Image (cartoon, one colour):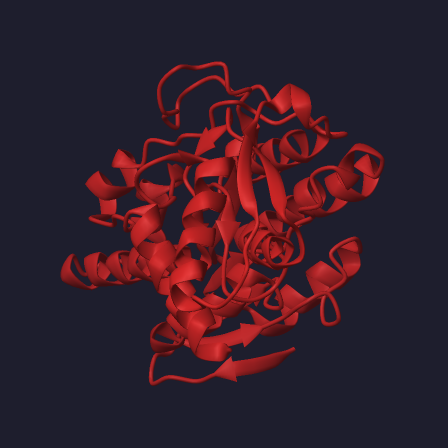
Length: 315
């Protein structure tokens, strides 16, 4: 385990999954809040309970920010044991260790815990019903953390992407340069969420808890216990996968006017069968996060423009 950076703060923050999209952004947004110890699979084998316990006990952090997850949605259908090991068992062990040392935990979950049958955005108290193994494993992770009784905020998000790594946006932009047309699902609704926005929201939540504890002369742990639970955290607005792709390609065309990009063709879910079923409605109501912490993520299309600007500068 190696510190990503140090600040003047006394808190130590254990960050798992630091090599992923969200983990990479959190290394930037959390640095002002304490000493960030960034770990990935090379440092902590999340399929090994002993490795997890050893890492937490050696560091004794005040915060555990767990971004590590098995996220291969379709592959999870044939690798359910591995998905549950990382998405259910590992968070449960982290929660048990957090209880042992009095740490506060931030955990991340997904819109895929819902079946998508609801006609309006989901609130945190809505009945869950995952359609695939990935969603079921993430829901099981939520439950492990919740039943541990620790101070933990679970942030459910949706359609995470960024300017680096493997994600829908970069995949579409690459394919749009290689093909004449792309057929994209247009009957699944949700909010693309920029990994940086989610990382900034996470830092804002932690900052709020620290400030509240200081103003009330209480411990951060006590304040966090009162705020524990599930919160929805994704970019505002909604679109479809097709709408997301169309917006990205239109912005790419503006940035690279001489480039040739594919024509986007909307299709139904039935026309694009996958091993894992996806919910038709992945919209999440994020008002609880705003009411408790004053945190609101930007509109999805505004953030997409910022990401496309970053990509344009890298060419």
